[in-house]
Length: 179
Image 1 (tube, helix red, strand yellow):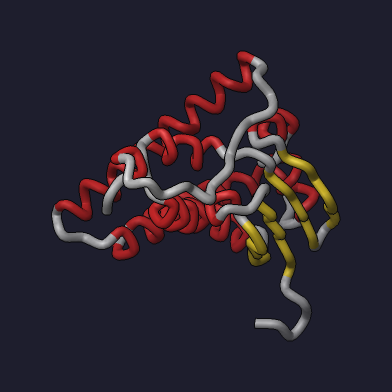
Image 2 (cartoon, helix red, strand yellow):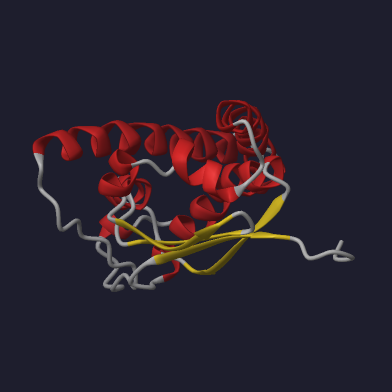
């Protein structure tokens, strides 16, 4: 794929600018960007060797999410989504992602992220909008697995990677009788 950095004249639909410039928050974001760069570079290198990103990356990230989810449910001592908020979406995490908690109870956790350091890393790598959206979907396999660990599903009505002004993450416990 051609990189946006090659100057092909296309304008990106992805808007992702941080409001907070706090040096500690910036340093944490840079660590997250570094890990996101790993994901992109691993996928890019795999593609050079004839592997499709979708052939392996989502499964690997899902395994990581299941591992993390097991630790989070153990730490929270519950599958309540209030426990997920307390263990994963802490104040520092909310600051890094410029996150707002819209609703939180045992069965629902509605979050809006105003900034994404992963998307920023992929933008810095010169990824196309299509690649950013694919990488985001792969990265979200981890969050989907964390949701699964809490007996829930994750809905993503909109993402920064797809050009929205925010990521909307909705953790929802399945209704009785729902598969």
